[in-house]
Image 1 (cartoon, helix red, strand yellow):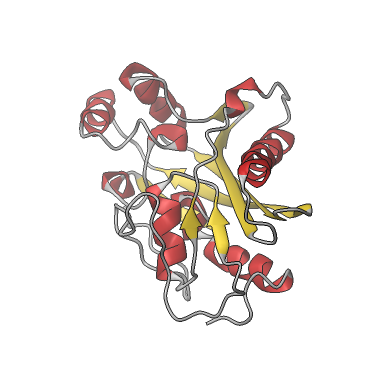
Image 2 (cartoon, rainbow, N blue to C red):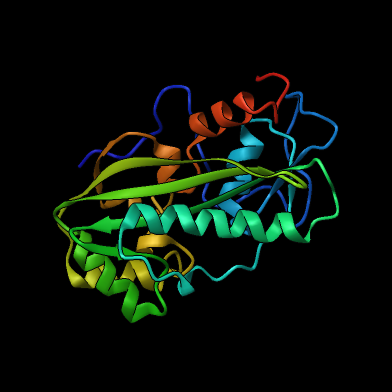
Length: 227
């Protein structure tokens, strides 16, 4: 079984974020004075932006995408990212600040997998993924406080799981990596041992497509330059 690795040019990610909740992250990349607000509590998204050297601040949206009713997977993930984006934009007093929202889902067959509700649900999700391919879809939405949403894009990555026993899946879930992740697994952790192949953006599977985020921020002048 081959180990999943990042594409050339994408950051290699550690299992946990380096930036503390609510802190500023990033490095030498030039951003406008308004900076960028990340509308997410995800430590993995914080780490991806930090590794890219993008200056940002964290303001979790607190939005509950579970209330969204659309059945189409693409419509759902797009709407979820926009809800997070608009929630933070409406509550921020920082007029002119850019806000980045994101949502990730795992799609296998006709089923859409978000975060599991408990360990039993996590094992159920993983059993759906074993021995087949699935799609990881992340919507990234950019907006500006005082102006509204500017753009929303969806990035897809195809991931293949090899065979695994129920006992292996149960032990993996018990290790504590599952409950805060769409599809109940983290490709950058123990679950890399289940993954036999990745087609597309590795960082998208982690939670934020690095190359596409950079392109989005540059296109809308949220960054003056990169790197």
